[in-house]
Length: 294
Image (tube, rainbow, N blue to C red; front, side, top):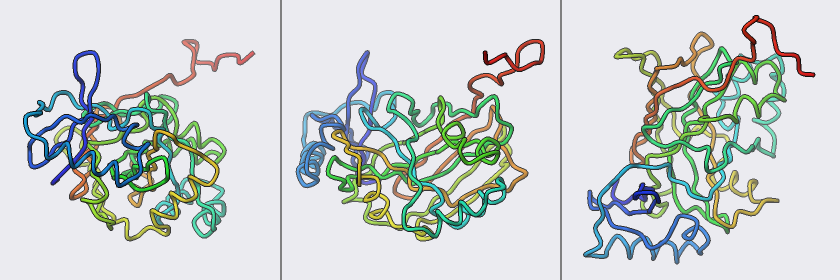
């Protein structure tokens, strides 16, 4: 990657840095501050930092590439995603309506503190038996809705919970360790408009148990359209990350398991790697009965 922005741990605090051709330089701005600026001023700040001498920093521990940004996500933006929802649900016509309709499906995926980064653990719910990663390109949008950059995202999802009832989507999508971003932010002016190739691998020990590829050229909606809908009635003073949907959906027989490793790769955007852990409880008491909700 010719230039990228990284969130790094610095003792008890964190800092932002620019990496260009293997050289790391500290930024004077947080991501929130950059995304509050008009795009041309944010670009000037990033390029000035990259060109500064005498301010080199070490790479340090990588953190998720967010600070004050919510993560939102779009669904059913690829035909394969629509077909996957049909496979798991008895409400297939709902997904046809979203895929073909004017208004996209957009939902809140994670608050900043729930996001995990490259090398961290992603989660599957302990009360779900059918779970998959969703490899996606994330748009880093500034307060004005302009495209500042891109990152890779993993929208971990419970197919069993969403398949039982589409109204359970928040439980299928929003839980601890359900959203991974990284490894960095690649500015839009260096990455270009796409399309972007995306690859997914799931490893179980040394064995590859699932692999798939797609391209954002297969999306039924473009980036600008999705960003426009997100900003129609919402404001994001510190910017926002918008995941753009997945075109890689494993067959119905596949589920990820604790201990698996998930790799999401896109040329120019890097590789996001996470191992899988179970989170939460299965809701069953030691007696084997569900707890009394009263």
